[in-house]
Length: 383
Image (tube, rainbow, N blue to C red):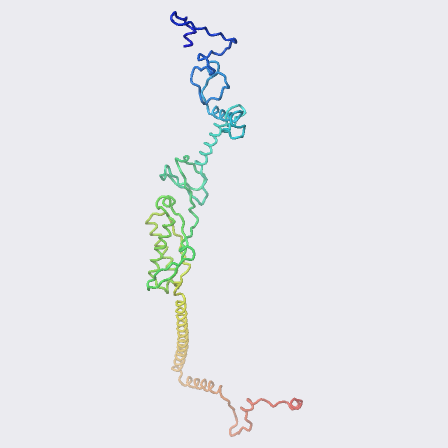
């Protein structure tokens, strides 16, 4: 090799080789034993994450250190310079993270700010007066939060679900203008729509007991209404039996939901519409009109009967009073009754009263009372 030839004297058996020429210019760099243009090797492997040295040695003459995140970003940013595939802002590498005035990095500060924001947003909870919150630790119920400011462990250790527990929810059944037919006790169909008002009584049960509590309330309302309608007739459903049906339905719904441990309280039920089915609506109107006419005739007959009965009862009471007086004084009562009878009869006929006996009237007094007076002669002649 070249090194052996330079260091050891030539042997007798081998031909003499010319000695290498000394360098004309001394240099402080170590000599390359391979004699080529490659740079001399350093004492250890070169770190690929360090920035370029521009031909400067990284061995004993140059400092060596481990790579950091700033070196990685700085190296990728410098590639956009001359010879790096584009100038600044040309997308040649990742942007360099800004530094603080003292030379330090803003990265720890940003990480600390994000961590503080995460902890603050997931541990402090502001609950309004109409709401309550359910705290779950790794998915299991822990406690219930009331109105005000509350603190919990950060997410994902503890989670909080907040719901409105005081506002009244309203479910209209059926939704929209759909037809909902129900069967009455007298085998008649009625198209009925109603409104259910309810709120949350126990937030823990409402959240964890049922898979879909809102849908459960609607299904229980449907079953309770059908049962209540099946116990009443068509006349009661469409007439004055609505209040009783609403009360029965509310009691049935509350009993079933309490048995389910749903955490729901029924505030009230209101029937909005009770109509016959659409296909028989015209015939039903005609039947209703005939029934109303019949009921009107019955009411008139009952009123006439009550009037006659009251009149007869009054006359009987008056006769009883006269009979009581008659038993006390029969002669006086007879004369009084005679006078009253003659007064009632003569008040409706024309009569002339003559005091002197044997006098013959010469004037037709009744005819004079009914005959109009003759017209004035002057008035008649002028016409």
